[in-house]
Length: 361
Image 1 (tube, rainbow, N blue to C red):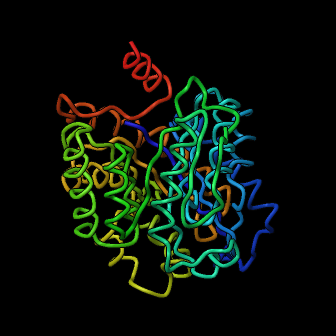
Image 2: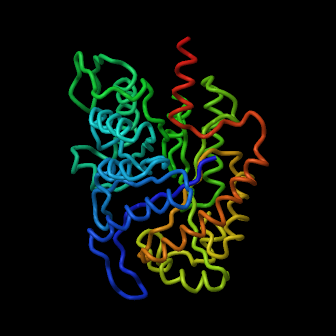
């Protein structure tokens, strides 16, 4: 089981002070948060990809390349790489290069992106989102697994005798998660290839995500990659902690109420009742997170959103101390104890290399 954090990189005013960080301050804060994640013993840091205000992470591989040089154990990932508006050739090159820089500590989460205006900025149409995701990912896999590629499709110029460089580290491409909040086609795509499915379940009630994950598990087994229980599932989560629950609620409420994504909508109490958001003590975070497997089955990766909605860097670092020192060690132990035999392990480069070499014998 892997535990980590993901960021959307929003530049949001602190509602308690009215101050908005500069883009430079926000980017530097994200780097500090990632380094803190390794310091407190987390497994994964993931960054989103956005090309519109109020977000800053427009170049995830630049950020992750820097972090590769500053970390030793942390798996470096995206929480969205836009498979629809990025050129698959560039994705293949960038992430293979990042693999080499990070000695394999890299994976990637593909997503369609749901910001309509971004598509025409990159010459695409959001109404073609699903076909783009399907075609571009099929090409990306060929670029990583075939040394010489001949290819023709609908959405980019053909390739003839093309070799993407550098080749993936040890002949094994980065592990791919397909992230979705609403699209069964993406769950089907993840299952078809035997990739991971990340249900970013932080916004909607769990019954919706149960359907997506069950579809993915069923189709994963249908395509012969293993049993339903061996499918590779990741989940999102949001937490804010203080020693006393009432202190956590009082401190976090203005941030929740003014958040750019879910502010001015359901109340904090309604949101915590229907989604993974936990605002309370470390023990309450442990207790609620342990219920996720009851809804979704045993899974491989849990990522928490910690630095959104204008929270000050100092506060986020305090949250990470509690997460790494008090919450995650208990979750590791409890989830390991409850995990049935035969459940898939979380993907790592070393394990995938060993599997690749074993298959080649």
